[in-house]
Length: 604
Image (cartoon, rainbow, N blue to C red; front, top):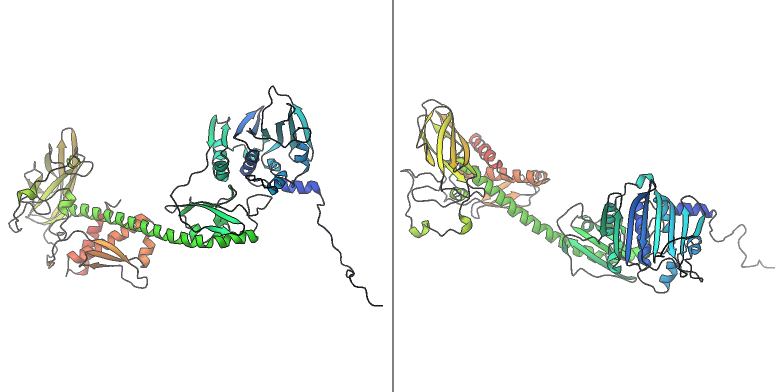
């Protein structure tokens, strides 16, 4: 006889999986929710699913025990055939949610599907009471205890039965009694942002312990809302995108949502979304894929199945588009930063050049602008009286007199400085100094001011000590002379000091720079990472070209302040080399230190 076919191989067997210990399984499920705030969100979602219009979360203390209570005006617990809340079904159908069957019948806007939401009270407190009125006008209450497999249902005496449901957890676990109403508010505003918006429910948190009340408003995002992004379409439905572009910040995150409920605080928790676009810090907002499957235990994880794979595929074109927008944002921010840096550096140099001798730093016609006025007849661009050796110019009356606008008039005296604040003069020679009085907005103050000059240390003589400009006659011996000016305007008095070095030998003045005076140069970047040069001066365009690929620039770019000082020193280097051609290296270094010192004081 032939061997029979269709028999199972010897020793093989099969069957269906089943729970070996039901209570152990329930315990594992109840303790799987690691975030107590997520448990609060579960209770609120149950109320939203029951078509509630108003939900109140109350945190308080009674009879010496802390409690958390959630009340709503929704449809309550589904009734049985007798019109009584079917608590028995709720307690005996864990992992078999009635909502799942309702959703299968086509109901929209319902989130629950696992039938384990109530069990999350184990992460909050010891006892749960769930109260709901029946159609018979009576109020019924179900009680459950943490770690206990029993439940109880009883009638509750009330004066007037309330519609909706009341859920109360008491006493709260010791580790979470510090949950403030404000913390619950902020969590729900993000966690249930779109569920609250779409349902129109009003949610408030009453913190009786802190005596405060908070309204839960859906979180608002900062930045520019991005329109015209590619549509993220899949075979299971479209992915909703609401993304905002702004300045980079660690606080900016894109959350992953399912049907309006946040699943992950940041989408970058998933390896598939650790790319530059999502992790750049430029974006915040939501990515909502309502068809994704969640891990039932925590409801804060994604099952990476074929549904998730479709999400990843659909978001690829979106990511490419975001990278382009982020790059445009970065370029715009870099241009703004460069303009601000240039303004800061130029302002610092203008202030520094007011403190330095004009005859040594006269290659830029900027000192009058730094003083806040145009040169007047009989003055050089430095604001000092013209000597016989200076060229004179004819002045037209129309060029001298201009109509001042209202805000051009100076305010009260606020500060004064001496120009130059430091200089070197030969023994027995003279030097002119000028007091520059300014208001709070750095406008030149000329009305109602008096001046008083004095020598506070050293030996020298002053001519015209009560004028705006004073002549200092150096002593016949080398030394340091300290000069002070006091400027008075009514009750306001300001002082400034200058240091004059009297020496019997000066730096050689073999300057041959014959170029026309120009304004302070601008700057631009040229990336040359493999080359050693840091900066170059382009005389035709009057700009300084900075190598932003140099290792020193990369090092300095860690902070704005450090980068600002680095660019300032490159400016000082190029300006000194330009202004003192032919000088030996040691003298150029001395000048660079001098110019950098006075400039960096005004870098802010």
